[in-house]
Image (cartoon, rainbow, N blue to C red; front, side, top):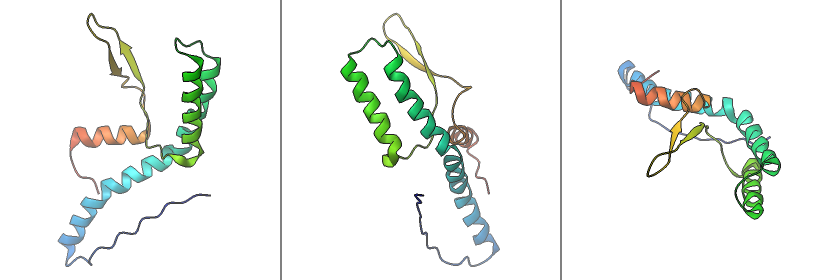
Length: 125
């Protein structure tokens, strides 16, 4: 098992108002950590699935590029990278340029939490 610890030292709150302010400040951060941890195993499995599918897919790129992408994904999944979330994007062809459009139905809990926090901009405790 691999664990990560953070130690945060703060002064004891002076009163109930200061304690409530601390809760407002730390609440969203702790919710983000919970969402990231909740998704972590699923994100690692998805990374391996994509790496395996690269070999079976007919892609319009050189096989050496596919091998490099597979090696990167495998390396990332071997605990060299911390996955915090994912979203799917769909290509949209344009007359002059192409763009990627976010699929609003996809994404991990962390991404949903981050989107909701940005949209509301309201502190949670």
